[in-house]
Structure formats: structure tokens, C-alpha cells
Length: 207
Image 1: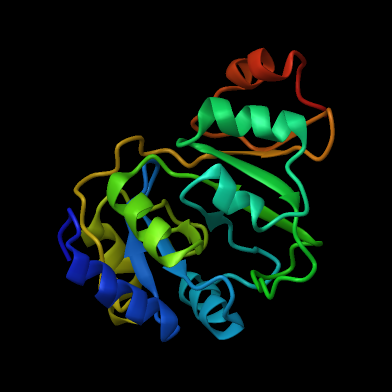
Image 2: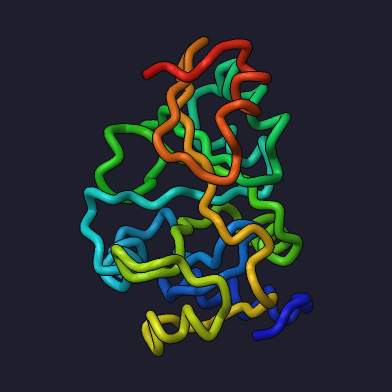
């Protein structure tokens, strides 16, 4: 399916997601493989397609800070400052998850990793559908797909629909930070360099 997406495209994609199917979607960083985060079977299908176990939980992509706020008890001030500075963009923020939501992303230790991507078509889908479990489109241990043909080589007919927006804009995975209180730690280095995080936080990451 080529982007930009029509209203009928959105209807079709929402139907596939509701049926527990997998999608490959463009993000601003690399292509991702997506599933309904509230469906244990859909997330299991996603992790199985990647060749990963439940000890590698999937992040959740959202359309806005307010959509992320619905997944967590609260957004601490530093985490919100990171979101306001870098969203939409290549920063994933790990926060405690709401215990009353049926999120089933793998072994998360009670957390959820959230990001608002800077990709128009995906943001449209997220706004219409709600959050999606999305992790990089690759087999475990191999490079993330930068194009739809690369993703198709990885997943073939395991994915119900491929959204093609051309080559990835950034081509590098997001930076992942964990920010529960006034401190933060970097769980994965990526497209947002440490210096930019320090400028927002007023301090270096906790080691």
C-alpha cells in the first residue's frame, strides 16, 4: 500500500489491526513491524515473526503526548520535558505502565516504552486507530529495514500489509531513555545524541 493514506486505506488498516494481523509501517527512523498492543496473540505473532522471545518487549508508538499519558499513571516532569523537546521524533521514553490496562508486550517489568514518530502517514494511522506495538522491521540480529522491499525479504506473507513511504528518513533507530523521576538513563544509543539529552535534563545520564 503506497502512502499517503486515503480514508479507505485507514479503514482497511484498522480492520487488519483489529483482526490481530501484522503491518509493516514507515517511521522517521527505520521501518517497523506493528501489531495491536492490547492483543497478546497479535504481539506474540509479532515477536515470533522477528524471531525474538517475550524477553524483548515491543515499544508502543503513539500519536501525541496525551495518547502516551493514557498508558501510564503519570508522566514525570523530566520525561515530559524530553517529550516536548524531541516529539515527534527519534526518542523513546520508558515509563511505568498503568496496571489496569491489558497491555501485553512481553516481559516489561511493569513498564512501557513510548514514542511519537515524526512520520505523517503513521501519525494519521495512530490518531485514527490508537497506539500500536511497533518494533524495528528486521529479523533478530539483522539490520532494520530501510525500505519496504527489505522488509518483505524478512517477513514475506507473515505481514498482512506493507505501507510504502520510500526510504527511511533517518535510517537509525531511536534513542531509548528511562526516566522515572528527576534522573534518567540511556538504555540504547540512537538518533538523539547524549549532548541533546543533557541540555534538556541539565545533567548527564545516570550510569
